[in-house]
Every structure is written in structure tokens, then in C-alpha cells.
Length: 107
Image 1: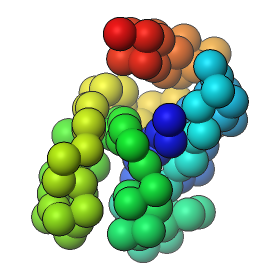
Image 2: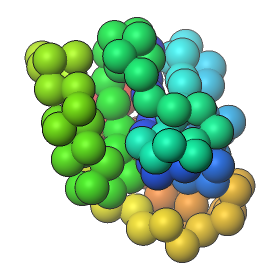
Image 3: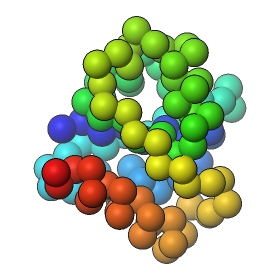
């Protein structure tokens, strides 16, 4: 399965998710950001690649719906409600990401 994690700038939260989950149970993981200054900016191609999308906040889902409604149609999109208050690879952030991933991917 191809999994995409989306946050604002792709520098801390989504990048952490990509780092810790790429290869988890054979899944391919990428990450992207919704803002112009993102490390990797969200594109229709990245969305098209993904089978499942995890957004860190409701605003990320809203931005995807506003700009890429056709691309996300029919995809599983999950909002985790993890605020932007963690540094890259923060242990608490990793624990929260793993908890959501295990719950959603092991169904």
C-alpha cells in the first residue's frame, strides 16, 4: 500500500511519519506539505500515487479538498488531529503517529 502523510511544511510531522513508517509491513510511505514553502509540496501526482492519506490537522484535509477534490475522491483520508508543536523525530510524535498507523493499517 502507498501511504501519504500531509502536514503544513513537510519539515517535522509528516517527515517524521515518512522516516519511521516507510517499509512498515511492506508499505511505501511519502510525505508532503500544503504550504508554498514546503520541503516537498503536495501535487496531484503525489496524491494519485497514494492509496491512503493521513492529514495531521483538519486544515490540511480542507486544503486538499479545496485544491485537489478530484484527486482525493475515492481515497481513504484520515485526519489525526496532531498539532504542530513537535520537533522532527520527537518521541511523543512518533508514538502518536505509530498509534494511528497501527490502528488504521492493521484493520
